[in-house]
Image 1: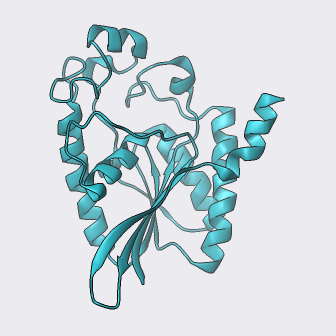
Image 2: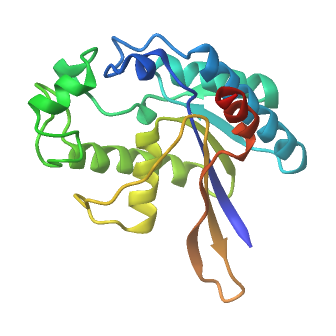
Length: 218
């Protein structure tokens, strides 16, 4: 039996992604037209699912691209959106708004390359972010035990969930691809013996974006 279910939607393509900029709170200007189209497609898919198995709550982090993603899903599913600072992405410090190529060159790699070292002045460390965000995500999971919880999230939030629920050691060199507008789903199972286990039902599911991909290729 499935008890709690967590469904993470990575936000649609944002302008900072297209521009190659570090999209912190000072820099994020929201979704591109393609990003809106991606979220509209995922919202249609989730709305069909919601009719049969309603979601209990919808969360988004505070950055503009997440709020816009959450608002589109909220309107499609007709459930309220809760914006929660606990779902914010990493703190980029002085790198906010800078080209990622320059930040990575100066730091000798991206945030994951040296996980216990800040990648810019006053930024998080990658492991520090995983610890902090994992602790706060666990609070939300405990708060919504037994419910279906939907997140309009950063890719990093999906990584946090995977790291925590798979028990991946901090600082591991392996990672995950998380596409804009993709769905990742965790389910908490309870079997007849009373044993509980988190199961990754799907990761980076972009089936609903196939038509958009064909249009872009044509």
